[in-house]
Length: 221
Image (tube, rainbow, N blue to C red; front, side, top):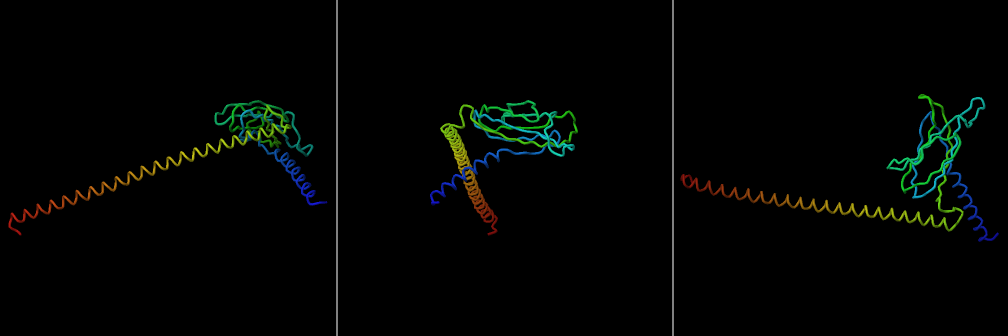
């Protein structure tokens, strides 16, 4: 096998491994105690379609394994932050999916919790959760549309960089204004000190001349 063929083979294996890792790393699982709520914060571009897939399992002592309890209901709440505008608020089955589309760019809070009628429910629930992000106006199998989405993302990153630069320029202006104000205050303090010294010197000279005239008039000198 030539060196070029080996390089192409290694590159192909690396791309396949990254693709598999990306697919596996999207899914996660966590545990909920009773009616505990678990929230995820996602920063979404405008008009991004999000599909969430989940499965709630509770441990069965009879079967000695985690199973899906059909009586369990899952509360799903999605809010736009910081406006706290509710996008999704409903109760679904123990294993289901939900879909929503972001109206504006920004942070979105996605929360899951187990619905229970008991105040002191301590049942442990294992949640398997996965989210898929897609542009509703595009087909992710189309390479051109994928490049368009990447260009949009890069444009948003550039806008954020511009915002950061504007903020830094504003901070520099504030620092320059504060420095100028400090220098003006220091110069005024120096001039006030000099004026006090001149006044005190003049008073001392006047007092000395006055005392000299007094002593001469009294013939003490």
